[in-house]
Amino acid sequence: MVQVLNEFTHGTQQEVSKTKFKEVFSDFIVGVADGLKRNPVVILRIDGADLLTFIKSPSFEPEMLSIFSEIDHPDGSLREFLTKALRKLRVEQGMPPTSDIWVMSNVIEPAIQSCGGVPHQPVSQEVFLAEFKRVAERLACHLREEPVIVAHSESTYDGSGIKRLLSNKFEFDKTMESVISGFPKDRNGRISMAYYRVALDTIGPSASLPPVGAVDQIDRITTDALKMLDADKDKMVEKDEFKKVVAEILGSIMLQLEGNPISVSTNSVVHESDSSSSKLFQASST
Image (cartoon, rainbow, N blue to C red; front, side, top):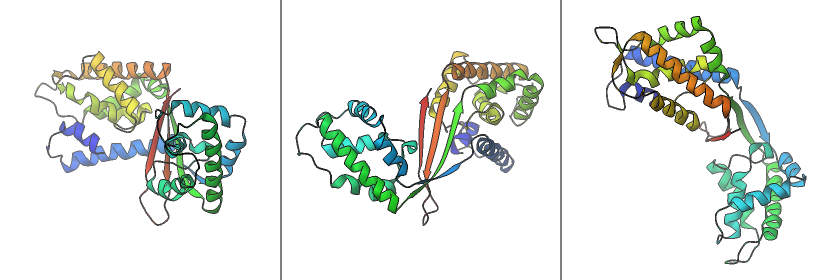
């Protein structure tokens, strides 16, 4: 929300009117609601069963050896290797979000503390596999006794929403007219190019795009599209030109997402005694 307002104030301390704030907040909420409609939140009960299934599966050893080879810590202790490896496991494999402080201190760390290994000795693949399996089994036992509740959602941005919007000229023009009506204009009715990013964020729900700041990869693609079309300058343009460039920017984003869709999973631990929950965004290109 702060990032959206920053786009309107251009990062300054400029005040935003109550009416403008209501408009921005309304658009933000619409975007959230649209996202929940497309990608509903699923409540998961992580009780160790999926983790045990993963440990016993044929994919366990090759996947863990792959993770072992990715850990950039050749002189690290066994505990460091195990901690880094556990952070790479996913909720689908039965691992609660390790970004959550409570999970790390109450679930992960107690299981790792009892691991073996000789201090200051290189960690071999064999030792790593054996100790990781023991730690994972202890974690599964702990989760069976004290399950962790996680709110989980998945989103895939593949450009299809943008394509639907751009293919319907009437709907696109109608949406853009609504967006542009809230922008300040000079006496000739021209609009500052500085509002392109705001327009993209406002039109986002109609194009199945996330809010500004929600997904880093989308933000980078948007920034690249703005630069490619030389649309990141602060100069005034006619309304029709403004709409045309927004369509071109969306088209550029669409092509990028069609060629390289972005999948994002969001996992948030639900704490019974704490109304706040920590979130983990794991984004990957597929």
